[in-house]
Each structure stands twice: as structure tokens, then as C-alpha cells.
Image 1: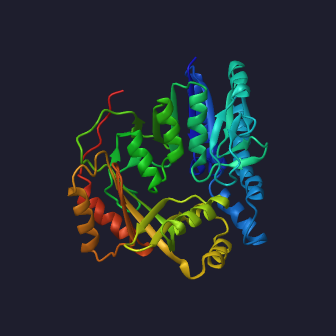
Image 2 (image 1 turned 120 degrees about the vertical axis):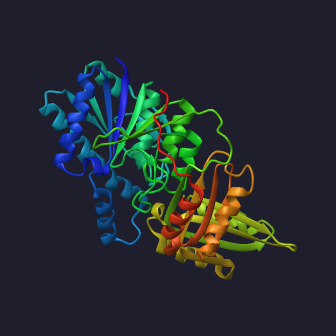
Image 3 (image 1 turned 90 degrees about the vertical axis):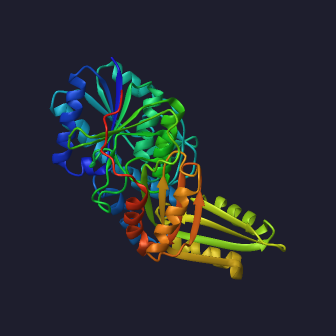
Length: 407
């Protein structure tokens, strides 16, 4: 039998009633003759609630202990779903990330999967059981519990699909696939029937919540097709897979992100840049973007963009930065990012000109700008992000009905 991996996000397992609906869907896949592995996130807002508990204890919880705490959320979901399946006479067993063979590096709170050893998963599949796996977590080579950062359950699912040579990886959430913008911000956003790995990875990096960027990276490396679908049913879905080159200049969608900060340091030549990235790296703080400008003299200016979502003790970090870099430091909070994504988006300057004109037309001053072959990104004041998304979507994303892809 072919193996399929299904992943259900927090909204899909937010309460017992929804867990029972997921159990019905999983049971149907099993009845259709598939070997099924299910990856689950924590129920609803459980992870946020656990974070709040930690912050009530201390403003700067240790990352290792946070991982021990936060990994409990997915264990609750996996056990309840396994119980629901067994109650339907569908044999099921639940495993934590470590029991499933998810091996990571030792970067607590933002670990990366380095290897998957799914021996226990394979054994249970051969016994005819559905295997439920706690997403978002693994075990380091030091035998420490680790978590994978925002959207880590997606990464768990794709990594398992690759290790098990699965025929499909299905990612279920509360929306039908991937849209050209967040439908809550742009009501007329269109569902995208198909995206390349590169486009989806850029959308995820730029703040789209449907899929995790590292998960797409895994899928690209192993050639795994990802189906993004709604837990609530419906015909809509988005396929993420390798595609032939498109006509350059197509804008697939607009993504955005809030809760960013910029940290700038001035120094002689590249000295400021080297000191800043070394300082951040020692504290396992990952940057989203980096800018460096070399002046005509000896001075250079380096700016790193960070996401508060991946920093659990920013107040402490800010204080340390100030003490280390003093007057050389510039720090700006309440920053947001807006990105236009598409294959060959910068083949000419046409899209960039329209992008800049749209922001200028709404009086949104730029904090920063960066481009790649798939993306144009601007940093603006956080309060302007949603208006900018609507303006850029209207200006750059051509209205089109989604079409069914060739499978």
C-alpha cells in the first residue's frame, strides 16, 4: 500500500469535536487502502497559552525549558486523535517527535531537522496501524527535546513524507489552499491552483502562514508534491511542486509580516557587520534580512532584520545589545514587511517601479528594500502593512480564476 502523510494544524484540532472530524477523515483514508501517517499541531491556542504561562514565571525563560514546555501541546493532540481512531476500531498509535526518529540540531526554539530515522513508524505501519506524530518537535543529537519554530509541524510532515517515500503529503488548515494574499486582508484574493517550490518558499519566508518555508525546502530537495487543503472539505486546493519556467514577470501573490525590528550597527569597514552577526549567532538569533552599506571613507553600516516571533526574550536582548554596542547601535521597532512574489519578478524593473509607485501613492515611507529573482520586499511602519497589502495586490496581481492543474 502507498503511504500518505497528512498534517492538521491547530485550528483543525482546536477542540474535541474537530478532533473527531479529523479522525473521520483519517479513517476514510485508511479504509481507502492507504498507510496513513498523521502529523498534528497543538490544539488551537495551546502554544500561545503555554508561552504566556512561561512569561508569568519569568520575562526571559530558558530556551531549553521552553522546548520542554511547548512540546507538551502536540502530545495532547496526538494522544486524543489516537484515542478517537481506536474508538472507531481503527488501530492507531501516537509518537512524540523523538519516538518518530526526528533528529535535529541543538538550536532550542528554532531547531532544524538534520535526519529522520522512522523505524518505529515503519514497524507500526506494517502492523496495519495509523501512526499519529506530534509535529513541531524532535530530539537533538545530544538527546535534548527541541522545537522547530513557527510552522514546524509542516516541516515534520514533509520530512516524514521524504523518509517514508510517501506518495503524497497533504497539509490541512482552515483555508482551501494558498491565496494571492491573506483573504482576511484582501477579500477578493484568489486561490492559487499551483505554485512552484520557489514561489511557495518565498511566500512562506515573507510571512504567508499556510506553509512553513523549511517544509517547502525539504519537499523541493526530495521532489515531494504538497497538497494544501482545507480541513472543512471543499474542492479547492493548491499543489506545490516543480514547475517548468514561467513567463517572467508574473506576480503570484502578496505576503506580509508584522512584529519585525531592525538592528543597525556602524563600524570601521566591515567591522560593525562582523561584530553584529557574531553577537547574534552566539545567542542563536536568526536574521530575516541583512543590509550592508560601505561609505566612501572607512565607515560601514550594517542592518539586520529580526522577527519578534522567534525571540522569546526581546527585552533582555535589547538591553544586552545596548550595553555591547552603545552609540553605534540603532534599533527600530514596530516594523512590518510587504513582499510581492513571482517567478522572474525582477526580469525587468517594471514590477519594482509599480511596487514603489503604489507605496509612494499611499504615503508609506520605506524603512528598507530588498529584491531577489522571486521577490520584492519593502519594510514599512507596521501600522501601514495591511493598507499596503491591499494596494499592492490591486496594482500587481492580475485578477484570474483558479484553474485545475494537470496531475
